[in-house]
Image (cartoon, rainbow, N blue to C red; front, side, top):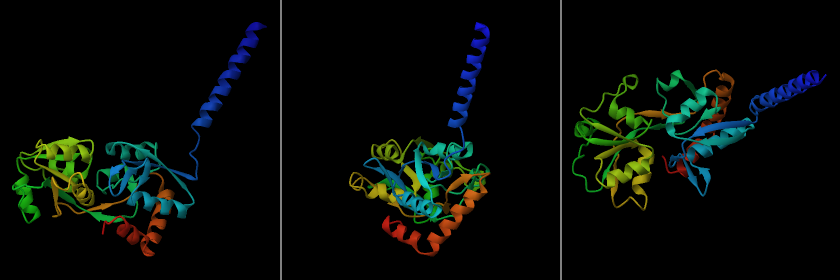
Length: 265
């Protein structure tokens, strides 16, 4: 009898445990968007007094409102945002994401919402990077130590990327940093010669009070890019909802207003 009771109790415990696990791993709340981001990319997404702020944050709030959804952010290294969407850890990613052929193999992209480019950041008294065109600057980057952020387009620009038709900068050393602040520190102390970074963030960091007397941005486009929201590959319905809301915001001028608010255009 004791054996029978024991078996019944074990079975009951296992059944309850399985039910608990299934409940915990059930479908995500349909009213919530779990969003991967890297909040170190001012003015698109950054933290201010512990709150997520920026152009991308405002844009996604408007999109989510139109969809009747709440937004929950997961802040992570930029290198991880695409993987978080691909694995299903997050529903979408918004992080100043450039549409690229390699990324498009892992995720779908929404309607693009902005055009961007890569700029050079150099020391304020720099006399090396005097080029007036992309081609002249590329020639002056040859053999230099160039700071880039891990996973950013700037890294691909320096080391080369066949899918983007970027040829590696000859004899250059790409020095990879976790974020732009670390790269700027290295530039200011002479550890690197220049930084390749997205246009608006490069201008923001160069114009900040702590940097404006030490570094500057060369406003010559090295690339032409488009930013978009990354969506799980097999979630066409979500992509279509985001695209529809995005188009409404573009058509009614809301996106243009946000660009002015964040001094992007």
